[in-house]
Amino acid sequence: MDESYIKSEKKANKLGEGILFINFLVIFVWLLYELFESFNNTPTWKWYISFNFIGLGTGLIFVSIFLFLIIRNITK
Image (cartoon, rainbow, N blue to C red; front, side, top):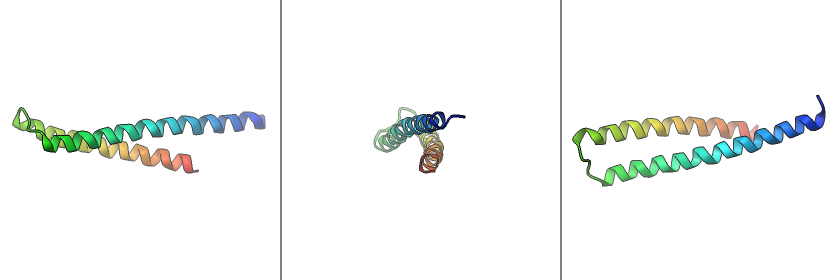
């Protein structure tokens, strides 16, 4: 392979990982906002608040894992 091709591939990978990082960071902040908002609002149904805690908590865990993996790949 040509050296310039390898450099452009690495540059494209870094750019793509940077875009993924920004997207997942925005999703992470949005999930945190929704979680804090769910504490302040009274739910329409009693079971709705438990679904919010479980769903938003699980989403935060998965997005945090993805953010960690993306940061690890960017810093390599």
